[in-house]
Image (tube, rainbow, N blue to C red):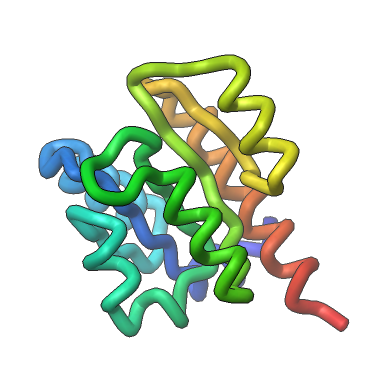
Length: 133
């Protein structure tokens, strides 16, 4: 992955767990990513960061709008963002469905930092390829 691409990339994290958001903010900043965090899908959708996001990391189980619903909403609106779903309650059937729909990765919390880094690299590469003519 191109180091300059990583430093120019904006990763948005959506999760209703404040401790998880704080942890992800620190980790992603330490990896030189631009990062924005949101406590709900609605907050993300209302933010100007929606248009700057190169990668989205969203929790599967959130009140009001789940990570899967958020992903579907973005696709339906024509705003495809390379997406990584995370969950503390993995479901193999759901994982398979979401990967078929185009989600880049489906990670079980707690996940290894290396797994997240690899997933972000894949997501950013996929997103870059989708934007190129």
